[in-house]
Length: 228
Image: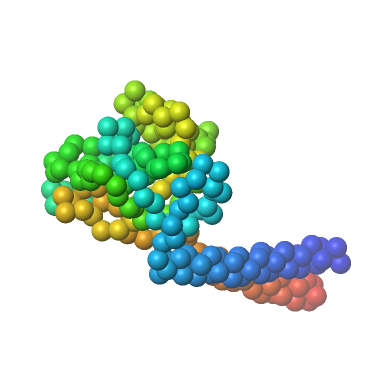
């Protein structure tokens, strides 16, 4: 009997531990979100244009100056967005930014429809682009295969995309452009830094609630066992 009771009471204790772990994760996630909010409110920092410059921390807000190579564009991903004409399938437009004294930097300028019904802005000469740093991704087991001849990719791997564009060397990260759309309307840049989901509070409540329910069930069972 004693072993059965210990076995039953151990379950609420372990579930409470899961709830406590979620509370700790909540504090950790809230700190990250606060850091992102501060970075978003602050002006972008200049990105050093040197070959040996350290790779910025992921999601750092930076400003980069150079010349966009419009003839070496590519597409990334597939996303349906609502437009004035209705839902439209599109992707992120990626173009290299040629920098003085540093390897080209691939810039995800923003979303464009696959069927272009509006002109895409192609700024000439020296431009300064603000955005955030996205580290290189590696394809997963179920990642879609990129179309190298068609220059349409599904993994943000700068080395692979750069090679397909005929570039010997590119920066080991990608810049996701931030800001309002250009006068031409396309591409549509990101309007905020990415924010990870924060569901830890509801997870903690769920675990604590389950522990309380099991404790009530055990208490009822224990009283019945004593009376038999």
